[in-house]
Every structure is written in C-alpha cells, then in structure tokens.
Image 1 (cartoon, helix red, strand yellow):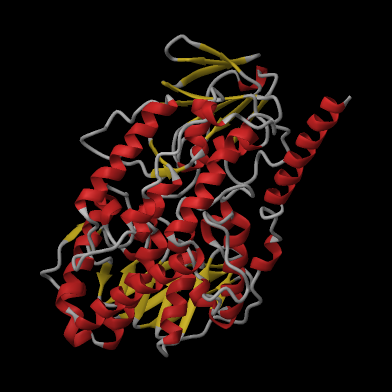
Image 2: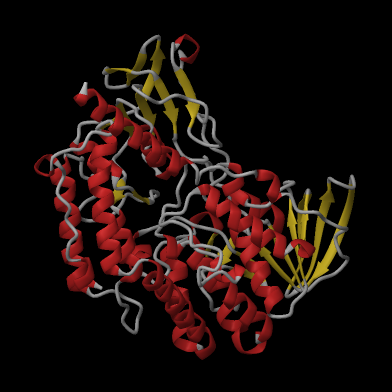
Length: 525
C-alpha cells in the first residue's frame, strides 16, 4: 500500500509539471485582429506583410519619423506564427536571440521575460502587443497586387477585401516582408491513408491538438524543425515510441550549443574563438555517439545538409538514449491498416503518422509583385525597395553575429533600411548601386547577406554602431536573464528531469542517465 501511494505521488507530480508547462501554450488568436481605417493615399514607406519582420520594419521606420502603411492580406497579424505554429511549438532559438521585448519597452522584465526557447503562445502574445502599438499603421485584409515604379518612386496597387474595392498608395520606400522559405506546407500524400486505423495529420496549425499521445507509437515523416518539435510534443505527452523517417539525417544540436552561439565573446570581426569552437563541436559529437543518435551524413565536412536548418532539442538525445526515439532513412511508400510501409520494404507498426516534410518556397511572390528576379546581397531590389525575408541557411550562418536568428538578421537590416532613407546620397551605391553584388531571388543564402553586412559595418560608422549596439543589447539580455553559470545549472537540471519525464515520472538513477557534456560552458564564455 505504501509503495502504491509513492507511485501515485510521483504520477501526480508528473501531471502537475505537465499542466504547468501546458499553461504556457494557450493563446487567444482574436487578440491578433487589428481594428483598421482606410489605407492612406500616400506614405513614406509601404511594408508588405504584418508578420514578425513586417512589424519590426514598421516599428523601426515610425521610430525614425517616417509615415508607414503595413498592408496584410490576412485579417490577423503574426505571419507564419499565427498561420502554422502549433500551440506546443517552441522557438528554435535561445530566447535572447528571438526576443522583441525591446520593441515593447519590456526589455528589463517589467512584464515578465519569456522562457528560454519561447513557446508559440509567448511569441504570439508579444506580436499581439506590438500589433496593438502599431495599429494605426496596420491595414489587414488588404492584398497587394503589384508594386510599380523604380528609383524611390513607387505605386502600390492593392485589393481591399474589407471594403471590396481596389486602391493605390504612393510611397518612396517599399519593404516586402513575405516569408521566403515557409510557403504552403507540403502535404504527406501517400496511398492507403483511408485504411489506417490510427490518426494521420500534418504537424502544423494544431492539427494534432486533440490527440491523446499516451502510449502511442508515432511515425514522423521529415526531420526539419517542425518534425523535431512534433517529436518533443509526442514524447513529452507520453508517447511510447517515436520513429522519425527521413531522406537524410538532419543536424540536431542541444540547447547548450545554440546558447553558446549567442553568448560566447565576439572578436572585432564578429567571430568566435576557434579553440572553443573546436572544443564544443567535440562535445557535441561525443553526445551524438553516447546517445546512440545517427550522425548527420554531411559531418565532418559540413555542419548541416544544404537546404536544412539546425534544430535545437535536448529531448532528441535523451530519448535516443532511453530507446524512446529512433530514426530510419527512407520514405513512406504507403500506409496500411496498422502501420506504414517504407520504400526499403520495412514495415513500421504505429498508431499516429505525422507529416512534416517541409514547405514550398514563396520567393515567386516577390518576383510576381515587383517584376524583379534579382536581389542585391544587401537585400535591396531597387532604391529604397528591400526584400526582407529569410533565405536558405547555409554554413556561414552559424558563426555570425546574427546567430542564425531571422529576427537578429531583421533587426540589423531594418536599421540599414532606415539609414538608407536618411542618407541615400552617401549609402546608395553600397546598398542598391550597380556595383553591389546581385543574385537570383531564388538563390538567396545567408552567407551572402552576412558578407554584405560585414562590408557595411566596415565601411560605415553609423551602421557599425547599430551592429555593436544590437550585439551589446542582446548580450546584456542573456547575462541578465540567463548568464552562463545559471544556464549551466538550469540546463543540467532539465537534462536530468527529461529522463524522469520520459520514464513516466519515475526517477532514473544517475548512473543510467545520458551524461551531460557541457560543464565547461562558463569557461568558454
């Protein structure tokens, strides 16, 4: 009876922890609806898209004294976060690298800091607050049809779905903040889904919100960021087994590696110390080997496969160690009554199949709206016309001061855009001039605009100051909210607790746990 009581207490505690975590995943999307008036006939800058980068751009421009109209075709703000994020999703970046508290005047924690790797709910709450602050400049249900003009003299044609009428707005600057890499989700289209006795769904937009994961055998198709997030969701909610099926092994890093990418000191060229880079990569590789995870096929020549990002997940390694998670190379050929058949001929029994096979590119939208097929590596399409959108994350992204964070990239280039508006005669040739390197829009890569950013920093004192202030503010945020010694203590404790959570709430003896490999974090910082 006494043992039964202890077991009940353990399970009750585990359930309380689960409920506490889930409390941070709820969000009322109605707060993303912005009341609006008619679109003005003329402004200084038109911003296309009211997602994260669109509202960041509007904030930068209005703060500099420019009039702005943000045109958003959906009835809500929030971009892909309000379209595709699951309620259980977390940011694939350490919190200080994906934080807009400074834009909200909450950078000192006045309204409470978000948790590390913010939840979707926290991100959307911040976006709703930013939308409210910019509401007089945001016009929802307005679909841009065309951007005409050149050389800083533009006419934006739009369809106002609310008023059921067409209209135009004149401006001297345009910033297209329409997501490039994340277009429509690719559906999992394989034969036999109708015969499956379990659940088949895409891993986006809360399509799996009502499922009971406990005891389920789960197959996840794909190994990108959404797939890794669905792995975490399934395991944290009690799935018995998760098998990831993908064409190749994506790169997964523990939270410690991502944290170090932001917090380690930078030299004058915004590079990290080579010796500590080598040491932390060695620890990372040792973690892969100790956990039983399959190494990415591209190692050691490349950190990641071309076209992939790096996903951040501690549970990935702990779950492999505890035999709760495994990966298989291949594709799902068809679905049968009680599982999936792979192209290899292997049959995998399961109760849930989750499709996370990526998104279509949306770069064609920029080309269609502007009639331009090339973009400068400074992100400019023309004078005062910028395409501010994420691009393919290649090798260079992981040792730059952007830290592979699209928000950090956006913070820098929105400052560049404002400087271009203020000083076109001085900066024009370097931002949109004939000698600036141009590439096809479809071939934009992070290393290109990182190189352009460094050139601008080296040749313009004011842009250099913006970069320094951005890095200083971010570093201050990390050291205030989660300095290295605190991160080590918290992350090591989380590491241990993951074993217990994956073991049904029952503690796992220390000697049976996956070792923690990053005790040297404070020394590296």
